[in-house]
Amino acid sequence: MGKGGLEDVVAAQSAICDVDGTAGRLIYCGYDIHDLAEHSTFEEVIYLLWNGQLPTKSELEGLNKLLRTSRALPPAVIEAMKKFPKEAMPMEALRTAVSMLSMYDKEAEEMDKEANLRKAVKLTAQIPTIVAYIDLIRNDKPVVAPREEGSLAENFLYMLSGGTMPNEVAVRSLDIALILHADHELNASTFAARVAAATLTDFYSATVAAIGALKGPLHGGANQEVIKMLIEMGTVDNVLPHLQKMFANHEKVMGFGHRVYKTEDPRAFHLRKMSEELGKRAGDTKWYEMSRKVEEQVKGDKGLNANVDFYSASVYYMLGIPIDLYTPIFAMSRMSGWAAHILEQYANNRLIRPRAEYVGKRDQKWVPFEKRQQLEAANK
Ligand code: COA
Image 1: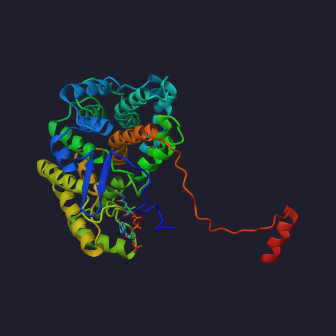
Image 2 (image 1 turned 135 degrees about the horizontal axis):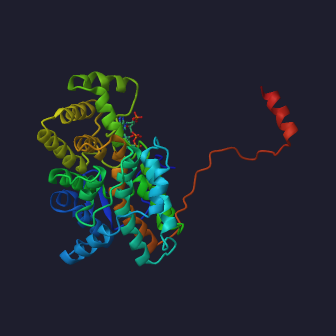
Image 3 (image 1 turned 60 degrees about the vertical axis):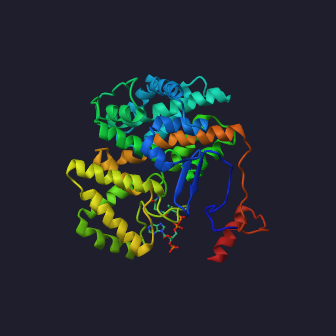
């Protein structure tokens, strides 16, 4: 038995993504995340993850066309979403709506590669619509039809605002955030997706398994906990006393630490820069300054580095996105990575079925109910 939590266990071969935790390097299909964040678009990265190579212009146009024309939701799913409880967590609503989609897809149970690729396109295009509609519906606003133009990031912000075109800075900021969150090797949600896919269940079921895993605060749920902590701290001066209290109570500081990275998470570099730039543009660098102070302190006292969730929190806050949508936005991006891994798993499948080391009792003698009660009483 190793260190628990499958630490350092290699559970699959994959050609999609590699994390070098010692050097702090992340590559998607051989391309450094820094190059992709600086030069690519999210759609280009989706193509890369699904095909193992960057697209030509016409290949990208082909994928863009498919994604843009797949954004609308089946009317029955929209009607069902209107009946969800208003106070439902967005991740609960997302998980439920994605599960519903399979019942309105005639190909849901088709297992050939082309049909599964079509499902990858549909889910990647429809999840942003679901996330925007969750927010519109709970605020009693009319749903806005998706545009069949523009990037996924632009259309999402357009729908979320109720139909106002977003500015270019907001679109590019979200686009970079989507690139940075797209894949991360065998993280918990991707592993959940692969375990489900390996039973040869359908694409939607594997995606629902992944969404359920992403929701947890130790995984995708961390980003919204970060901004709640910053809001509670309130000022730069309050950072230190607040952290000291957390350390004294042995509380984890969300957005710090990582199972694989022993040095800085390369994704944090870009998000830190964006957090600063967005703050400067808005004339409000408070959230960036507080984040810097938290980072210095946690690094100094605990030796822990900020992970992807730490600075994405202040970036989304500066973009005016409601806090409980941060994790669903992570899902919007990671859908592309889940899809790549589900397709890779189907292409070379073997059931994933590890063993447990049994540490329970053995050789117990079965006794009837009356005697069990007597034994219980005798043991009291
Ligand atoms: N704040 C304070 N202490 C932390 C910490 C954090 N964010 N992350 C790890 N530690 C400490 C643990 O308390 C533990 O200390 P101990 O050995 O004295 O008990 C030690 O570092 C190892 O942590 P552990 O939780 O066992 O590491 P892990 O590899 O199992 O967990 C995470 C990795 C990401 C789950 C963990 O760092 C964490 O919970 N971070 C906060 C949540 C988060 O940001 N998640 C998003 C990840 S991208």
